[in-house]
Length: 180
Image: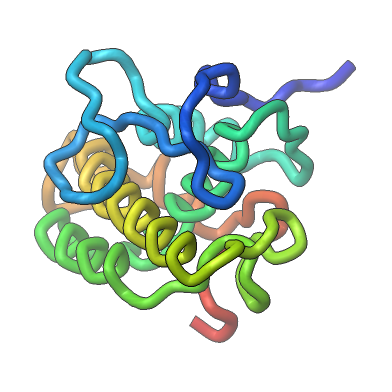
């Protein structure tokens, strides 16, 4: 029996889903469809950031519930963020990640996306719009929290123990378009 990947504690949480991703409450000031979490406990973004350096080591990940699908997406997004902020200070990294969060991105499950074939496409344009709004909200908050971790010791220099993972793919996939 080998080492196991970290799975989401929210897999058993009963919430509405958009496509096959759970609409989980998050701690955020960013507007979007996610309910606002008012307690200090970890949310799905904390899980993605905190488990990133362990989970990126895995080429396989057994999905044990809907929150694991969201954890996979956010892990791929953290990886994309690290690629984009390489060589930047915290202020410019925050600006870059703010732009990345809102840029036009392929929805999970759409053809050409990193998770095509792994997640189904949305059933309607309205569902796609709601999923895009939810993922944009998650992407905005993830970028802010990631920068807090990566630049915790020095706002001028990214932590090398975070940045070294930008060269490794999770599940041999990337949200980063080919050639970037």
